[in-house]
Amino acid sequence: MEKILVLDFGGQYNQLIARRVRDHRVYAEILPYTADLETIRKNKYKGIIFTGGPNSVYDMSSPHYTKDILSLGIPVLGICYGCQLIAWMAGGEVSTAPVSEYGKIEFCAKPSPLFKNIEERSVVWMSHTDYISKMPEGFENIGTTDDCPCAAMQNTEKNIYAVQFHPEVTHSQYGSQMLYNFLYEICHCKGDWVMDNFIENTVEKLKAQIGDKKVILGLSGGVDSSVAAGLISKAIGSNLTCVFVDQGLMRKDEGDFVEKTFTTLFDMNFVRVNCGETFIQKLKGVTEPEEKRTIIGTEFYKVFWDEIRKQNELGYFAQGTIYPDRIESGKGDADKIKTHHNQVKMPDDIEFLGIIEPLEDLFKDEVRRVGERLGIPKKLVWRQPFPGPGLGVRIIGEITAEKIKILQDADWVLRDEMAKNGYEKNLAQFFCVLPGVKTVGVMGDHRTYENLVAIRAVTTDDFMTADWARVPYDILAKVSNRITNEVEHVNRVVYDITSKPPGTVEWE
Ligand code: XMP
Image (cartoon, rainbow, N blue to C red; front, side, top):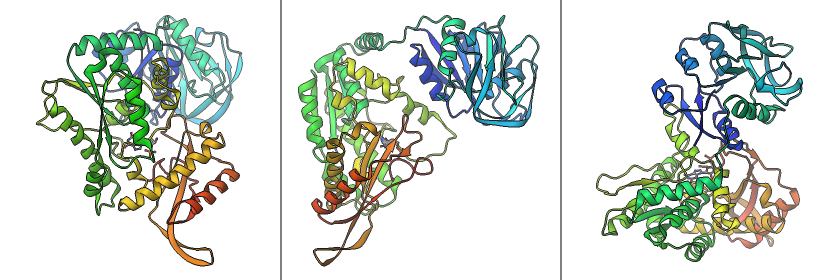
């Protein structure tokens, strides 16, 4: 499989670059700028893309790379900081620009293989305070803006290209075409990254790796673990056992839905472990969000380890980890916002042959495409993400059986109304939260002192950032009315109008 390397210099769009490359049917992987040159040489990449980054190349503490990378004979494309870095490495000069450019800027392109099939004048997305003040020798200027005399440059002999703007964001009018040109005109890729190949290759690999051994898969009923189950089941059939942990923090009827789907859909063994009471017991009196998450995560895995111990032969443990999970866990110096439930630490006394994560290189929408091709029902493949800790991170303060019931009932009303109005497809995720606040109200001439429910609905592509959804007032009014009428112990409903950042999608 041909591969493009996205060399990460700390840019916020590194995943987006990989995504765009893969949209053009070429596999892309991201490595940090600390990856050594020998690894890069050995991996035989078809091309390398340097990402943007928040630093200045002339600040010696900012991320740099040995200039030998420009002599590997592999085509290179530098973006933003990556563009400046190339100029710097090749002997040019970079300094603070007299005018910073942010947002949509008119760009004037000169002839270049990178700009094949784009118009001379187009709009690009800029975000920079430094610029190339002197081009390095051997390079040719291939683009300008009013305030940036060298907005793009090339060295066709060495196959090195650099653009000051961000072709990976959709605001760059021909950005996608430029990336396409880099892949096909400059790197001469064939475009062999297609989902059908992925399924075939993965199933073959899994068969070879697992042989006649057994696999236990931790199934949450979410998209990722379901698709992982589908792939492994295709490879090894009934040697796969999916363990579904119903931690008592699922949405209303969710556990039954997962059980029904999996027992009828695939050739595999399905074990449902109902341990709601244990979870509530462990969470008694706990109010601190990270403590809750840790307890839930730990309990989750205890169930899996128990199932592994029950097997009388050594097997594998599988889970539905996807690419962004891996990347986020790999960012050693990033601030920890919240501990995701599948960041497992293996206990020492567990023996198994290894971990299998067949989706570890895929993005969410690629996972969904694999799911569809495997014949997994759309209802499951396109369902919204549901956090492993479930309603546990949507009940603020102590979790009790009564609060879980209130939240399940309120959430069910919200889902029902969204579905009835055909609005659910417009949103990436929506749910109710129980903030643990009681307020005074009046019902049937009586004073009430009952719970407040918050509605959270967001739009987003990648869940790294999100905007609060502009759900029509009529739908919100109906939901509010139904929740206060149909759900016991709720007398007030509010709508969360916070984006991410500064909020996160979940409240805890
Ligand atoms: P946040 O709250 O971090 O959520 O903005 C982003 C997305 O991740 C989901 N989420 C989780 N998913 N285990 C998961 O599998 C977790 O522990 C977890 N915490 C948050 C959240 O629902 C949203 O889709």
